[in-house]
Length: 251
Length: 226
Image (cartoon, rainbow over all chains, first blue to last red; front, top):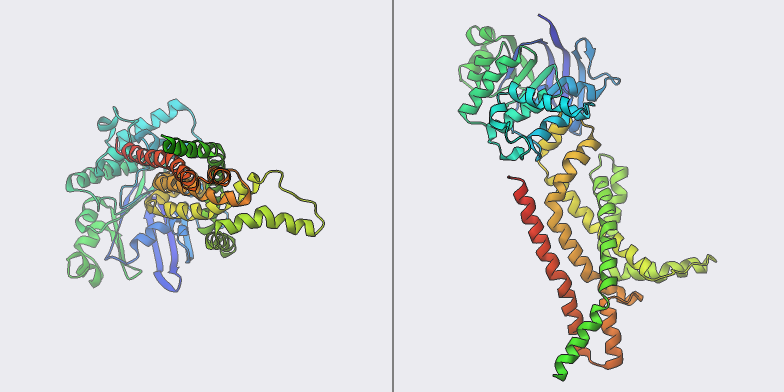
């Protein structure tokens, strides 16, 4: 089992407020790692350190190292565009661009230099098939993506992310805005995606973490309380706080 | 019958000012949008040193009357230069008129554009950045096109406002709609028909424009869904 991300001594501050404290963690290749914990515990913040999306927020400062395939992504020489190509992201609220379905998917590849029309067509078909949206959209590729339902939009966003051929996909509560049917479709999708991709998913839904993930990290007040195989976390947690949280005693 | 003819005469006199009024307004709004976009982006910068001049610009141009700005540029600036032994004269007074309307409009447009840019859902910027776009690229490809859709009605209104505002240019020697009416009044003493004619001609310009803005707004909203 290969380590994809190796996080050491990570501290993150919003101004004077410390949001992440001394995080040490490894994220393994082709596995699904779930990040759970109550609101405000730092799990989304942590997720966003992995593709440096926190750079967008003013006043954020970071200490420690995050290595992706043994290279520190916070090193000054690290190419941010390259990082974002390798580490894709899906957000809580479906956020397709107000363009056609086709255009949504080809934006990423175009930025990274794919210009050949046939190749782009192929990418659109491949990624839409990967997210099981092809049959529903093949006749309306050139219609606005905003005409899709919420669940379809979220799958389109996943396809858009896959189109740049990332190695890692970060998902920030990708199903929290969706209905149960759409949710189960996306969960089913996750399993298939691990054949090719490493997935890190933030979820508020404990059952979801239990159902889909191989590893689970429990966050509380900016610290990682426990980090283990999912079945261990759910059946035999070592820390009392983890047990209290997953059994619903708080959070 | 004679009375009706007087009013028609008032309107036809004022109509002759349309090319100048429209010309000045269109060029000024063009300058205003370009410059306004730059100022809006400056105002949203992370760096104080970039934000500061933009803020001063907007304060100055919004905080002083257009006619004062026009008088300064059309007559004040040449006088200042001449008194410093620099021979300078505007070849046509319409040039400072266009410039001052453009600069003035930019201050208002900048605020409109800034609010439009900030009204675009944050998720759009995040999605664009997460795909590897630089901030500039994300702005250009994703955010600005969406912001323009949001601010289009406000920009249309800015054009309408500007058309009316150009009336003050009659005081710096530009022969636009109002000036035509004033001149005819001076020779005919038909004050009421002259200025009513002017008002009607302004309405002839602004009413169709506000219809067009409303229509474009409806079209844009539709194309989001289909």
